[in-house]
Image (cartoon, rainbow, N blue to C red; front, top):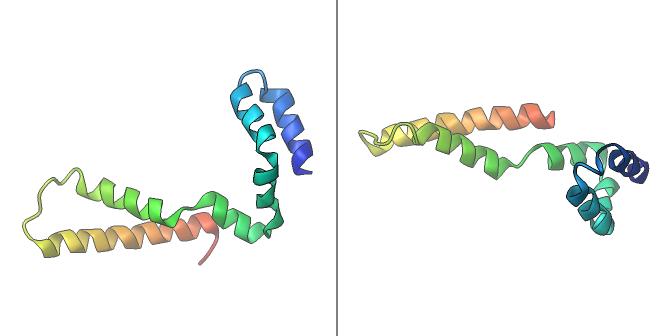
Length: 96
């Protein structure tokens, strides 16, 4: 089924995105390993990267501020950011 979907994708978008479809074809043995996992695991693998989500959230919080009056204020802000990122990851992965 996955290979058929790849064929359909290539038929529709192959001319515009030939580099992508060629890369997927050349690496199909590695890419197709993904489909050996259950749907729940694939959803988590595809939809989330917890470390990147937390890092992105921390950057969004700290960059605009520039300076903090003390270490505790920074830690409180980061704590709340991590809590927020955790909620977002849970929503994206379907985990509650």
